[in-house]
Length: 256
Ligand SMILES: NC(=O)c1ccc[n+]([C@@H]2O[C@H](COP(=O)([O-])OP(=O)(O)OC[C@H]3O[C@@H](n4cnc5c(N)ncnc54)[C@H](O)[C@@H]3O)[C@@H](O)[C@H]2O)c1
Image 1: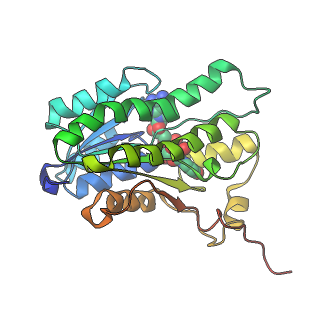
Image 2 (image 1 turned 90 degrees about the horizontal axis):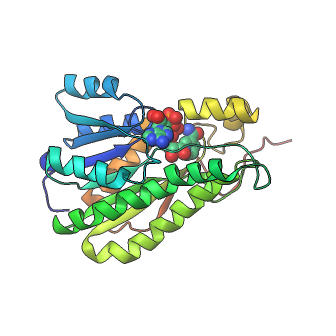
């Protein structure tokens, strides 16, 4: 990326809550102009950024809308003059197996979690290429590597995001566009507490199974995104960064 940070632009989906909110605050603190994208109001985040002297605007949008790429990237260009960092972080889940999840629910999960990332990237790539490069980041999940039962649509969408990351890294690396994703296990956000209730797994039990014994806070993911978008990460491309405390390599169990 060639532009100084003070004139860089980041668009972040799911910016109204959890990881997206923390990432928006982090990038604004770093001097980016930030476009907050969510289906819910981002007024609170806008206010927080504004009161600390940052620059942000918001777009309220359902990412299942096939025009989300044009609308979000178009808005970033109109408001801030371009786009340097795209972070597709919003996601939804639905419980069930292939036997029980109807097409309509499966397709909605794929639309929001995967297709929105593809549609956003399709619009972002030419703009980033023109600016000399950029960073595209996806929030995937450990579930895209290692399956958690009864969450087939979510897991498939995240596995596809991990491979999309690799494909885009090769297709667009020579444009100066690096694509990476993170694959967290549990993160302390509203989604985790919702999943805990739906799947009947107490958050404490999840924590106990983590090799580090620590469930990451959203700002830890935000810090990784800030690094991945920075020139210090210029050789990191096509990677899935496991932010799972080691769960991808094994589960902790206390010594007998
Ligand atoms: N929390 C966890 O334990 C965990 C674990 C692994 C991966 N992740 C991933 O982290 C990312 C962020 O999740 P979070 O934990 O911060 O969740 P969250 O529920 O706190 O935030 C998700 C945000 O996405 C928005 N969103 C959902 N559907 C949307 C749509 N159709 N259009 C526009 N916006 C939409 C929501 O309104 C919300 O603001 C997701 O990709 C999730 O899959 C979370």
